[in-house]
Image 1 (cartoon, protein in one colour):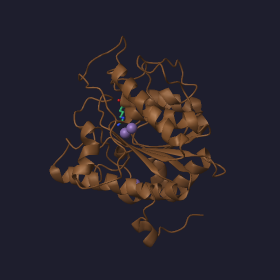
Image 2: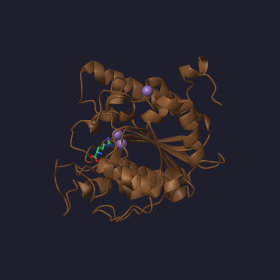
Image 3: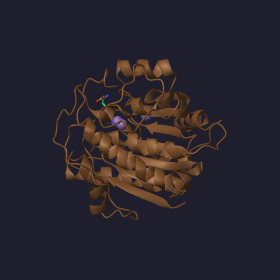
Image 4: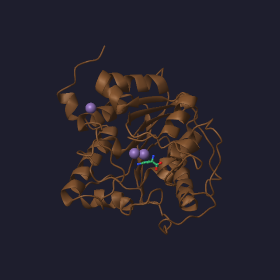
Length: 305
Ligand code: ARG
Ligand code: MN
Ligand code: MN
Ligand code: MN
């Protein structure tokens, strides 16, 4: 399967400058993936409140996601695997919506420390990178579309979605998630049962017969800050690098992967050493998702069951 790459140098979904440099930094560090060009993104006047709610940069975020969704839809139509490198996590509205608009039975695996399911009514920060799931999933209480997002409407059912890696969930997000019955696997669950059991459960849930296309939205803050320090909202106690790699490996081996996001690498955060390490680990996840054999396959984890 050929890969379509979109580099999305966009940071308007959150307040910290630098996450728009993620894609170019990977390049600068010598990592090459055949390149189908960069999405043109609007210039963000930081903290610009573009509408009547608290939400920041909604027109800009919506515009970027709309363009991205069109490119991803086209790639999916052509039977290609799409890879979207961010940029902040707001762009997943575009990639997932575009993917789901063509792949009607899409399942979504959201790997993140956060749920990113706030709504314009529940957000405490106004940052759209904390909200993409609320725009993608049907049945969100009091759903309202934001300015800039008129092109998009919820496209997934709650049972099409599973979370892995959660450890910084706001009470109102938990409430939404429980109400909808979305499968959520936290770091505690992984510590208790092991990553092998958890990834199996998550995939079983969103792809019970192994015949559905899968979108993986990989927020690098799901990993422990020791592994990916250069990210805007780090949370201690995350996935180990091996756990992160293992998830990527199992998903890649499922043969069902048809869309990938990898987001929230911010090379303006941390020391040079931090940035180099984050780029390296981010790139390793990308390569394994694209089918590279991981070191775990050479020294496999013990089988589960
Ligand atoms: N829950 C917080 C918020 O709504 C943090 C979200 C962090 N999201 C991310 N994609 N890193 O703003
Ligand atoms: Mn996150
Ligand atoms: Mn652990
Ligand atoms: Mn996220």
